[in-house]
Length: 287
Image (cartoon, rainbow, N blue to C red; front, top):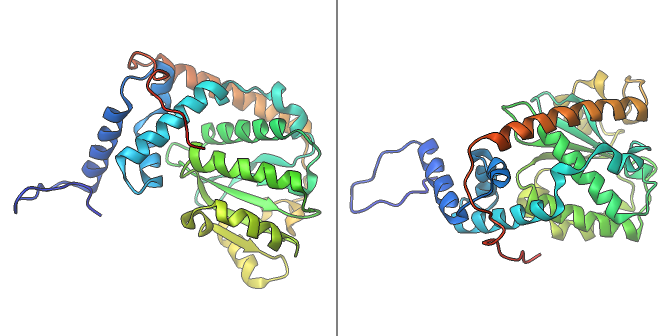
């Protein structure tokens, strides 16, 4: 698809990469001056994701990015520390897997049946912390991740619906194009009612990234085998991996990765940035 317009019958010969860079530059102009911290977030790769999420419409992408920057300035997701969310992590209801899929993508495991917290604020903060750390742990060649949602022992609750609605909004507006695929593993019959509630919140593009997998369906197991090294998956998923979630080991791992992420962020912020603050030019988000 060509994004560039041409005059008369003479069309400039440009590569797709040049076209994309042109759109990225358009967004940068629309964003205006940035703080050093905001500039580190608004890399070409980030702008490209927001453009893809908005069908390469630079005005829509810049508006969405401004709203995201304003949210980050207020919520400060990069400043959430392990100690802030450790209690939410105790049951292993959500964690970054210590393995990747066959395409090298980071995997986040969610086990709604292990939900123990009633704090919506705490649950969302834990989600954001996990997203931030998953992103920092990605290989340089990767910019999206896989979600593996195991519905073993899960029951529908009204509180989960509210948390899921906010989760969907956060992913859609503040972390666009970060989800490559969502595996819904062994959803119970009651999940059909839940899915009817959640599906309208998602774009058609997002719903196409959802795969429903049942352990007793050979065809579904083929999906898992194509995505993952079978021996690395959790025993709850019907495979041979015997290690259970260990909170202590996960805490140690997260603290190490958190330290590395902070060092990486400090380096990015120390690079030359644009001035002054974006806070004065962003608009209130519609959401």
